[in-house]
Structures are given as C-alpha cells and as structure tokens.
Length: 446
Image (cartoon, rainbow, N blue to C red):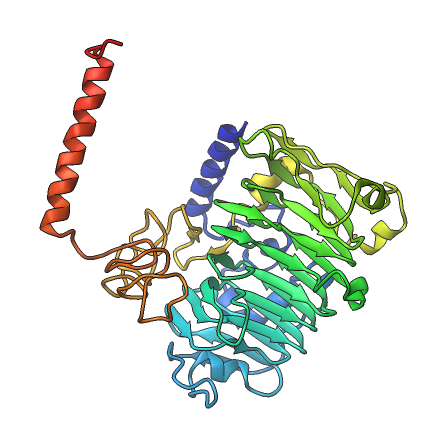
C-alpha cells in the first residue's frame, strides 16, 4: 500500500508539472490563490486564504510591498536597508517579497514584528544560521514559501521557527529540516495558529505546542496542523501538545521512529482524516504517546481519531469521551477524506519557481551547495557547500560544515576526491563486485 501511495503521488506530480496552474486539488488554501495565473500581481490575496485557527492572520495585508534585494545580515543591531532583517523590523503592515533566489545566513534570531508577511513565492529563499525566525509578543504574521534549515543556538534554542506569546499566526508552504532544537515551537500563551502545507524532514523533535507541564496559561492555546507532509527521517513530536486544543487534520505521516502525535498535561487532540504509515519497527506502530502520566491519569484525556487511515499496522490509542463538547474547541475546519491525502498534500513544502516542489530527498534544485541542496537536484551555488570546511554540528557559518567535515559541508562536497581516496574507492568497488559475482555463482561453499 505504501508503494501504491508513492506511485500515485508521482503520477499527480507529473500531471501538475504539465499544468502549473491546475487548481483541481481540493486543498482549499492552494485553490484560493494558486489557480490565478496573475497571483504575483495580486500577492496580498494570500491573506484571504488562511484556514483553521489562524484564519484571521492578516500579515502585512494593506501595507506596502518591501522587496528584499540583499541576502546579507551584517549587523543584527543595525539592519541594513534591503535585507530581510530590515524588512521585518519596519513599523506597521508590510508585505515582504524577494528580488531573486537567496541564501540568508543569520547571525542571530530574525525578530519579526506585528503585521508582516514574509512571502517567498516565485523564488527559492533559504533561511539558516543563528536562531532563525523568532515571532515573539506579536500578532498577525504570515510566513510563506521559505526553506528553513540548519538553525543553531545564538541567543536562542536553535528552533527553525519559534512562536512565543503571539497570536494570529499562519505558517504555510515552508520546508523545514535539521535544526538544533525544534522545527516549529509554539509556547507561552501563543494561540490562533495554523501550520499548513509544510514539509518536515530529517529531525528529532519536530513540533512543540505548549511551553511546559506547569505553564497553565497555555490552556487556551488553539492550533491547527493541516495538509502537512511529515516526511523522511523524523523521530517524534508531530506534534507534542500541552494543555490546549489541537486540530490535527489531513496530514500525511510517512515516517516516525518513536511516535507521531503525543502530549502531556491533558491536551485535547482531534485527529481527523490523516494518513499514518507506521515504520517497519514492530515496536513503533502506535501513533500516539502520552508522556509523564500513568494509564489511570490519561484515560480521561480527550484524544480521538476520526476518519484516519492507518497503514502498515499503525494504530491510534484514543481516550476520554469521543463526543465530549471540548472537541468543538479543537475543531477548526471540515476534514477531507483521508483517501485524498496524496492530492491534498501533493504541494507540501516550498514551491519552486519552475513549478517543482523542493523537498529533501525529492526532486528540485538547490542554491546553497555545489552538489545541490536537495539530493538528486541540480542546484548550483558556491563551490564547496554552504558552510565551507571543518566539522561539528554547531560551528557558525564559515567555520564548519554540518554533520561531518570535509570541503563540502551540509552532506555534500563539490570538490573532487583526492588521489588516495580515488584509489580506495576503486579497490573497495572491485572487492564488492567480486564478492557479489562469486556469491551469485555459488563459488563460496559453506
């Protein structure tokens, strides 16, 4: 069934590539703006397309367009005109777009002020580095079509995107991976949030919704998690919830190692129309995980599964009263049938200018490494990878590569192998070929 699903997704991708403006997706967000061939001339229409608990997020609607022309971040305390940091610090509503493809390496968290839209449509924008995007004590923020990855602590925990004591927030069509802490964390009384159409991959603790088990102000938190694709090499927290009301609807879960949806401190979790594909590990088939509570305590928590598609032995352990009125507070949109998940999540992640989808492990081209940001891609970028030479995960940009050393950094190397390495590769390849040959032809007798 997994292979059938993948085949179906490839077929849909082929159809989409032939008709870039096809809008027969059933995804209400994409159908709202993507069908318009002149969407670039009417960018602020996007603010009318939000759904879920964050549907009131206006972003920079009604404000001027700010075009980011400079990808540098020279002085976080004195933002340089033309940079993203200068754009997000402007007063009042501002709709931020980008003049070209950009790799923005931050020196410290990018603090976004109220009534801002960061709109990366039409280009490939990557944000990485120190702290990444911080949404603190603000309201009405939209972040759309940004590739956020390899964020490390710098006066922060190293989250890809941290929402702190904020409301009316919408995160849509972003690709997030490989950060030091969470990919998206919503804490300290944040509420009225929609996290939609994103692609998550290659990470441990994906999404935290709720500050701590004793921070009771999160009891009013309402978050919609919809149309996202939880992809390759994920471990847990998709999401991990505390106290509030969480609508997990029409997402595609193709990978987890420990669990997919979990929580503590009596959250209400309404899971509807998702597809959960369990990992091969027979001990990790359960979708859910209750933390810091025994069975007698969590049996009264309101967690329900409704219309979810369970694949490869996946199972969801419900609890509480399935018809409890509290589910009204955890319901933010009408779920679609899980049978349409391939179509609903087809475009999850950032949308590339050529109509492609930039998901790690998928197709597309990168701009930040000599071998392409995305495995299998044809991206250009600076020779030698994004962070140059060195080793160690937390080295600042320019001083070391993430996940191992070498000239490439960020998994890749644009430099040719040294002569000694070439010789070793040839010898090992020869041994492997001979071993396979003799094994296949029964030359080894035991």
